[in-house]
Image (tube, rainbow, N blue to C red; front, side):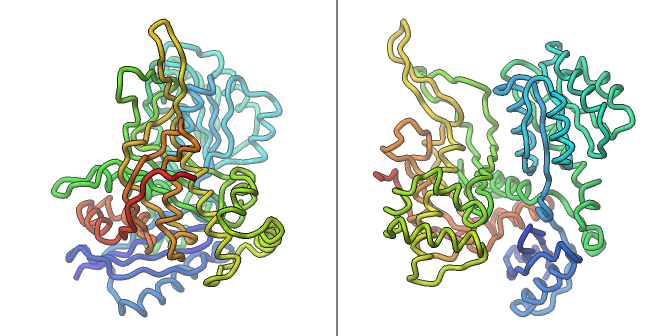
Length: 467
């Protein structure tokens, strides 16, 4: 046996997963509250006690971890045009596993600088202009930043003509130069910025998140948790040497405060009658809906879906729904019991969280008439041909209606121009192993992929819904 321990220091729970990499099998999983206020090592030890009650004592040959504790990796980005370099910066940050707190476009103002200092991000990503293009905006923004007192690192990933000048302007601060996230008009180059963000996370952020003591017990804290999930889903889709993947997919993680969506698909138009509008999106795309969550952001779900839809899905009247929402706001740790009204409400909330978040993540189509006749204009990713939907999150793994809830990720005749999947197999991450498998894939990709293919439970096949 060659056991490896994989740890996810979450904002609420610390999750541990034991894998025998020699046999290529999952040994067990467990979790405990993350003790970020004192020492995260306490929460880790509590989780390990639970794990070893299932597996027996294990002598781990390696311990790897990811973290979203204490707010995870918090970033602010600044670019030129909202739909172009600013969007490229946002995609780079999200793809690196960050929580993007603010995206600024054009020239920063004094009020913007004041707001940035109040937010105090972990990293600031400064971009703007294609290579050889506009330099005025990025240089202005560098000067505005230089006028303030701050200690967060700045990554410069804009017009290469202005990069060194930005570094000189920001002398005295921690500055990292990186390749332009959009070197040519409409061309994304976000992987170098993603790598730099992860590098800074490893070298600097760990110390600031109260994880340094725990790090002494580990072989390495490799990446932010969302980045680990991104690696896992990409491996699951594409496969690796010696093991095939399952193809294009969408992964939905419904949490208490946010809902994260990952898609692994090209998403570009597939016929000559469709014209693409806007910046091409990455094959591996992540979005975070900060207003959509099952507890802390529950009212965001209701606002997005509408009270009428929530009542219809839950079978509860408006008064009952409002009473339950008040209870959840006062006690976000409430867990539904089988057959009670909260279980009915959670079904509706989870369904609408998925529907709303996937609709925002996916692209859309519109009709327009040109001299050539009817033409379709696509914005964002076309996910209609994606055949696999992976779901996770407490509200989906604690219910027997997982497949029914997950089917809301699919296209609906009520939103005919949304480019969500038309039909797909539903798979469920009931043991919360995705982040762990992303960690494992750094060293044992084939083993990680085989475990995911075995452990992600099949929960039916769904087609587009009629309501």
